Image 1: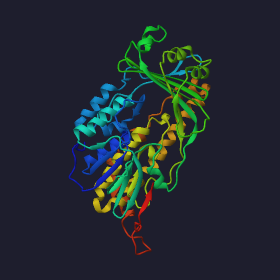
Image 2 (image 1 turned 120 degrees about the horizontal axis):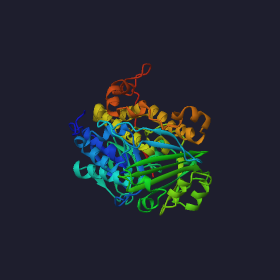
Image 3 (image 1 turned 180 degrees about the horizontal axis):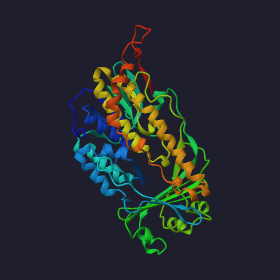
Image 4 (image 1 turned 60 degrees about the horizontal axis):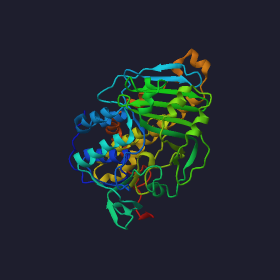
Length: 442
């Protein structure tokens, strides 16, 4: 297993915008590989927001390399444990369990984590800031990006300009960095779906005989699938916390915000004719969020014209929740750029950035597609087929996704891909890298 400790300093300076999982992982991995990293985040304080988030084994493999496994151990204590319960998939109207999908045994070198977004995020944030000493500036909003000469930089809300060898935009689906990379504003679109989401303590659930079973026997995971709708319900931390998400059709236009307070009466309408247990769960919910699922066409590039600004995570490639891979793919981004920069060295930063995109681009697009195929598998279920083959409604756990080792892969393919961006073209006596001119965006 690769060492969790930093490799020799490379002299490469990096600014990362955003302290979510994408930004933090990228910072941690860049630190491990010997680069100098600073994070800027607009939020003034760390808040325990959100509900459930998933990290596949390909993400767990990355966590397991941090602090000799200590970070993975902390995440495990906060995560759901389904090794005894599995995933029970129900038919939406009768409530019958049509397939009981077993949970694979945990692999300590590539564990799987599902837990509260805020709680898991705090573990990673404190590891980066307190244990590794990574410089994190909270409450500093980035208003612009620029690249000129051998540097790239950001413009902060108070007008301060900060420069480094490269800037990494990990600023999410509303990314400002994306505007510079693309040269235009990429407006989000409705995916045609939205998700109601909720997280709450088990107090009312355990008091109701209809629902107490979900909280009295450790962690559980159940899903009900119906026509163009699916409802997932989990209990976590030995049944003490409850979480549900309900994905449904929604044609509202996406504007400046796509997260709103949800209304229980709207949920009840969607669940009419469903297994009564679903409503019995939902009615215990003190509050919920109505989250519009954003869709973006695949970006033509994640790298700016002069290859000193790049995108990672949702800034580059938003995922549907049914992929259960959005955060994990962001982690793979961070690992890959860290490896590429170390292997290229300070003189090869721009070629390293282009190599990063070449390594990641096709894999990310393929994994993104699984969000659509899994959703459609459930929303367009052929129940006659399920009767003959219950596994046809299982949640996919494909080896090509989960057994991937992003760090090893980047190390293995780096040399061959890096050559494409550094050797002279065959028919021209000039390098592939363009001559730089200043580029800026407000």
